[in-house]
Image (cartoon, rainbow, N blue to C red; front, side, top):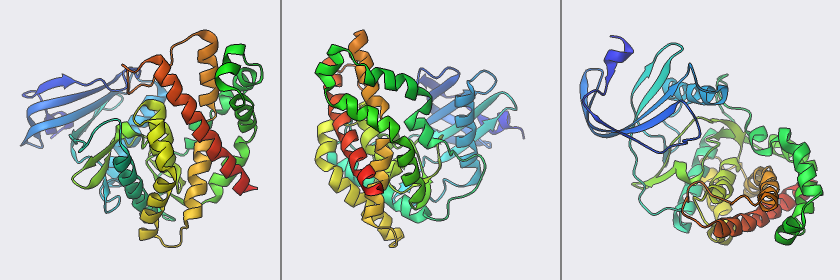
Length: 346
């Protein structure tokens, strides 16, 4: 039986979902009705995620193949006691054509943007995953290893130096001393990389932003495993707290109030699985990973100089002024983390 016969959704109603619309040749749909997988009827509401490999960008193609392999390998079957991926219900791979995953639809037991209890619960559960895999990350060649460059964006450093080193009057009014601090942070990126590489390594989701985090029936369910790979303890916590604010999946004031509690919660989860990892390791990993995101400050300066409205993707109805205020507050959290990491790293 070929893949097309194994997975048939012709009888289901397909509802396209607004998912990473900027990524061409990727579709995500909800299937309502009965889908046949391996000849068996699967009723209910399912998620179909398909990527056209023949036309997708190299970035998207690699991501789709990585998630497909992660499911096929069994890596996502037993992540941690309180962390799981959506159940795989079926898959289809057309050589040089389309990759399709048919996944359980997961519902979040709460509100969005994520509130403090949800962030703290997810922090703890992400910690258990980090502890479970610490020191025994699989070595498959398809795992993602470029996460530091994805966040530190060395290819943008030259432009960043110009923007932060020669700011406009409007950028100075908005950002003040943050501009010079951001410029210093660009130069400190190699030190942060060295710090991150020196920490205990584990398996990371690498995109544990709020939109990909679901608290469901007492577990943390993470969707979109396209960036799964090795990384230090604390790296996923930086995604959960920092990247969630940047995208609009959490509010800066909420995160600022719980940073220390979130680090402690994540560390408790780690230590429940691996008592050898210290809370200091977690704090340093979180702070150094957050410190990679210097480009936030440069992006704010460019937006002010060009008059471009500031937006956070998960909150399309948020006013540009409110989005700007959130991201300026986030830049303060970023710089505080960077200072701590650089001070601890010597």
